[in-house]
Image: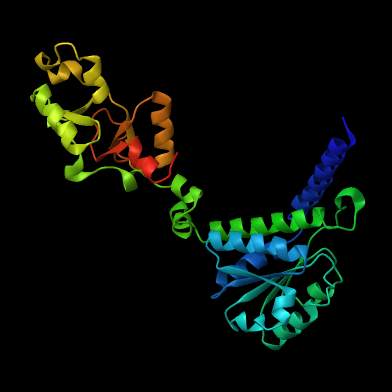
Length: 323
């Protein structure tokens, strides 16, 4: 193995060792729960603060908090010291400050401002006697870890900051019972949001569903297929629902108009719950090589006789960018 690959493996190994230390540290500290409690009760937002690379990591942590139901914004310590203190809502917001040493000079003005105005501070540092932890409302001491390559550049420490921040965001998400549906509302244009769209949101329902009695003839079935433009029609016989598709018609093209609908229709079509994700439904259609699924409610999905609530066509999902 060449030296570059050896260096890459050693870098990852060093960072994994750091994460293992972080993992063990949660067994010794109740301050993480105190931080969750404080933010959970906060009426305003979480201002995530850092200097240099810690600010870059803080940006990601702030974004995760906001995505998962905890309003947040990130600031570099320099920006806060030069006019952005006005962004802090006294009596509403909380400061979440990251610093490896906890001695960055730019933090001094921020900590004095927070103390003067009774703004709670959650300080996250790797140094127990640091100024940051001394003046923090809740002190989060992370384990000291070796940086990759034993360099001065922060690597393992920043990975631990990121992991700790993710842990905080997820814990708050669980505490607030933040759901996928709420996540989608925060990400209306994202690919993650489209992947979480439910079948019932894009299915054809009501009088738009192509449906016909099994007693009708093939010509009437084709007329309904053409009218509703889904390339299929639901065939109803008593309480049972079957499906007649363009494909069924092509496979039975010989003497087609002399045949009965029941001779041509698919007797046991594939069904999907209206609460399933559209992405899951697309995967089912792609696997089976079909373009339509009959939709029922969650209560009926396992029953032999299902209630028809809609039809999902592949094109409806593709038009929403779900692939």
